Image (cartoon, rainbow, N blue to C red; front, side, top):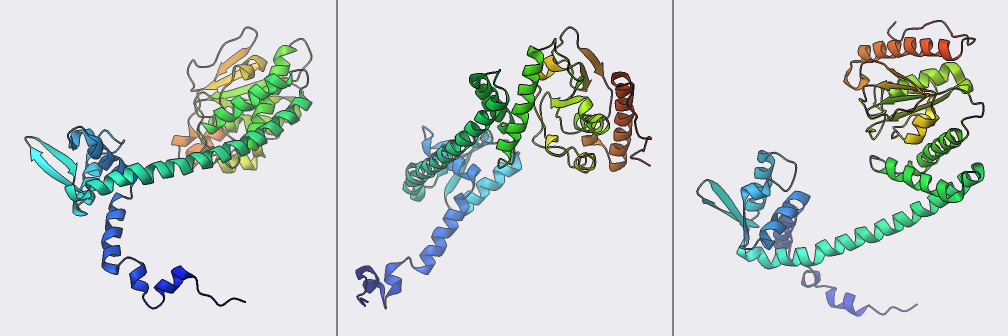
Length: 342
């Protein structure tokens, strides 16, 4: 085994301080890096550095982010205390510029680090998109086999459109592909039903509210719980939330809602395939088709309710769902009423 010392290492042995930054310089540099290590502060100094006169009014800085005046003042104070920017009051306004000593540093930061980080993010995004594209292609292939009459091209369009609609509002992305599979399958079933209206189908009910995160989810879960596969149940939102309300989740789990309990956007296909459309506070966004029965339920919003209020809303929805089922399935035997608020 060779015992030769690497040349670069050899120059540093016994003189480590010659090969790194002096402690006091590292401390000073770290303080500067800490001062600018905030997205809003980086944007502030970028605006100053690239302004025609090299300075900007505090009124311009307040427009950079959706933050309050005191928050802007806090960020500017941090940059001033680090010596990165200087301020000058003229009349009623204060003007800020990058301190002369730090102009080359800020320019280097904007011309090197920012582009490099953007390139890294773009590369990561490309890999991520490639992975998603492969996963969606598998979803498309599987659903094309289930819905051959719809055609591969239309299946692909609905899958990609479903993914984009869910991704726009998602806060957690690791479950998006399976949710897309579930949502796209529902949509394809709706397309198939709408295109074969003359065939015999079980009644289909669509519950619509604004966020599809509370009322419509509970109503759909209750109806599915009572009717099983004798009724096709859908729920949707005119402006879906990223996720179901926390106060509603335990009640949905108790009803066995499972994978279906995620906010979904309202689609034209879901309305066309439905025999009954029940709206709850979503206004006039729902399209109207001849032959479809529409009901508007005035029900409280669980997102704004206390725990007792949510129980009362569940009881109200339970009574309404029972009434609807007695009309749709007169022979269905329903269990005794058990109030959530009891």
